Image 1 (cartoon, rainbow, N blue to C red):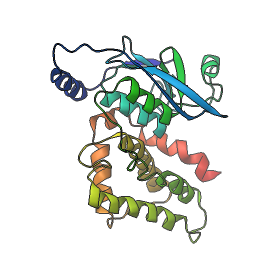
Image 2: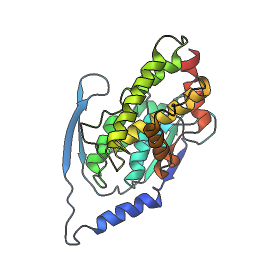
Image 3: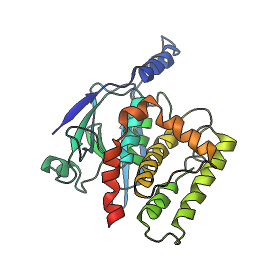
Image 4: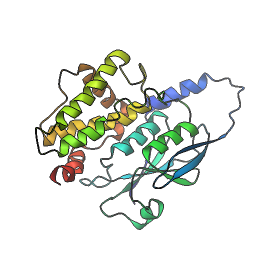
Amino acid sequence: MPTAKITPSAAGLSATIKHLSCLSSTRTLLTTSTRFTRPGFGKGARSLAVTMSSKPSDPLEVCAKASPTKPNKLGDCPFTQRVLITLEEKSLPYDLKLVDLGNKPEWFLKISPEGKVPLIKLDEKWIPDSDVITQALEEKFPEPPLATPPEKASVGSKIFSTFIGFLKSKDPSDGTEQALLDELTAVNDYLKENGPFINGDKVSAADFSLGPKLYHLEIALGHYKKWSVPDSLPYLKAYMKAIFSMDSFIKTRAQTEDVIEGWRPKVMG
């Protein structure tokens, strides 16, 4: 299997070192166990316990989609990028295992019966679902804190589904374009009053979720529909530019050609 050991960016590492230097030298870091419950990966609910730590002793293993166009390159999954940005921003080293989702290997299906990515190994357990993974990372490695306040966490949450609806649409008058514009406008208005990021002046988990989706939106709609976010939404456009220029985003983003190929079945289907 193709693997790549990743070292977080120097900027992220520097920020972590500065934060740790503010702690009292006499403070003893204790490991604690935290348990949270979230709707499960399939049926019912699943309870997950993680042990709080300052840094993993070994790189964290992460399964991600491989590029369908170039060998040994990261593929086009916005949910995986969300996880990788989180790892980068927390300066956590990781070992990336690239998976050909068109020809899933047996070892992968053993740890992910549904054959989905992203997948991360924490406390000797393989955990799927980017929502659960990012929450587990926040619980286990709380510094620097990246959680978005609950009242802000859902900002932009309907953009992805409306983007897909418009991308798949064959009827210009079916309302899907307007539905997307409505959601984008709502985020633009929110950022005007509360920005530049979802949680104000600092990036947080909600930005790491929304940013990759907007990246896919920009590439896919630009290619298949010759459509772009209108200039009448300046706060959203400035937000996209800021997120897309982050070191952690650039390091973990998919190649443009992979995003285009990844959405082709939706458009042609």
